[in-house]
Image 1 (tube, rainbow, N blue to C red):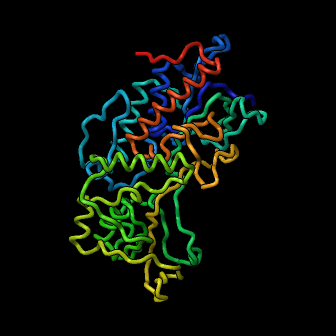
Image 2: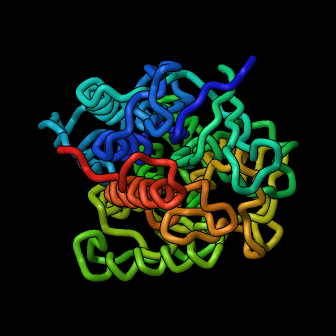
Image 3: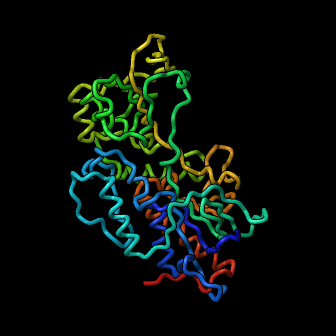
Length: 378
């Protein structure tokens, strides 16, 4: 089957992908789904390929008890403010509803569910088009804007005994509610925001033990509203530019004393233990060799960037990450990464979407692949 064509393929339909799609529209790019053989050679088109069955990105998969009042922050999509929502409504309902309304209002060319298997150079030409192989056929494009986020790449420590533990193990991405742990002894592993949220929630119905590799650092300010937040973003951006694999945001910011953290401390469950060394059949082995019985382990250990489909392009540098110039991969500027490194936050994803499209329009104009310089349409 022959490949379909688009000037730009956006991979991922979450916040970053929708932001990029919005700015492509404003730059005059039209839907690749509506392209006709009679279209002029200079016409610029785009398509968004999303692996989910419905709008909402990773938000539609969050656990049931995560309410709008306790999410870590949602920034408006460009051009459409988030409408007022009930603070008690589950984020897995409110945010996807907002995303769906946004897609409809913008008229975005989104194809779902489509899983991207790999991206490769056509005929191994480093200056030619890119081929995007998917579960629904192939696309060829001048540029790929990757906005796949992290949800499908959970990070779980490779500790001895994980395969012999007979209790339940699950990652944050598979967590639904605390009810399934009622009356059990549960090890919650991780030092981030999600770990503290789950610790507070599960400890209300179960006996919890909190394990982290490092002593958690709680700070009394909200870095997103202070000059410290600017410094954090600069440090994350510097690491991304240098090609270091992105670390968790909390490793740069520390933990805030949120309402759930304060409540967990008040109830005496915010007691950290050093990370256990291994797992047994129904216990964990502490650093001193002693055993602690547990029925379940919840790995609140974060995520990696979901970039496996890009591995064939050789984008990674010697430090394990993808070195960036702005949003472009330094080793192949036909590929832009957004929702990566400093743009993992919702506000950062918006900025990265705009920056990527600006860079793409400039590149196409320089190549003579666009009819104009990529001016913005009102």
